[in-house]
Image 1: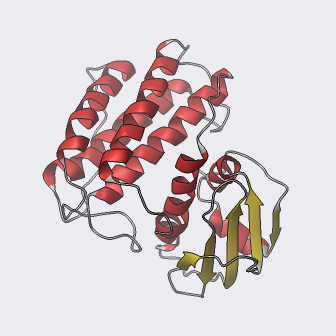
Image 2: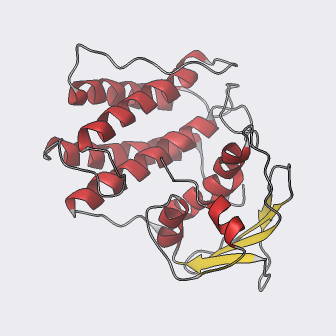
Length: 248
């Protein structure tokens, strides 16, 4: 991690804030509305996705499973909002009760098998889905630069590696530099074919074969394929690897 100062408790607090905004937005909306940021999804699909994600993620925190578990079935007896409320309640109870250093299976080869990885993932998944519903309803609330910077760090240190961990060999080669304009953090991400990316803090003035800059919030949502920017330059393959939100 390039950043410091984030803890399981802080990610739990972020989750609670973002979840509250998400629940209020979908509660007042027509769930048949098409999601503007996810082609083919309705708000009902988004609600069910969030509920299933929470049930899956908190399952690792609750059980401490050291192996990957299968996804839960969608309950047929609950409405989408009832299912969501059940999982929001469970997450708000489970997350603060589990210490960040508890051993547990995690989803990325670049992440330690510790519970804080799930605390972080849950916080940022909730932030992303809050963005999706608010963007759809044109009620978008800004994301703080500090939270966005932590989200950038999660993508570059954890999510990109998970994306590349597949049966298709990674052929990307070169260095990407991600440099937000409104926070002190910046990232140097080195790619080699067939290897996991190596991430460290970028030095002042350091350049790469690909680079992207701008406000942290904009870069955060660009990485998740929610926004477009005109400040990305260099190797197009590397830029495509950095963007992890297609289909998510």
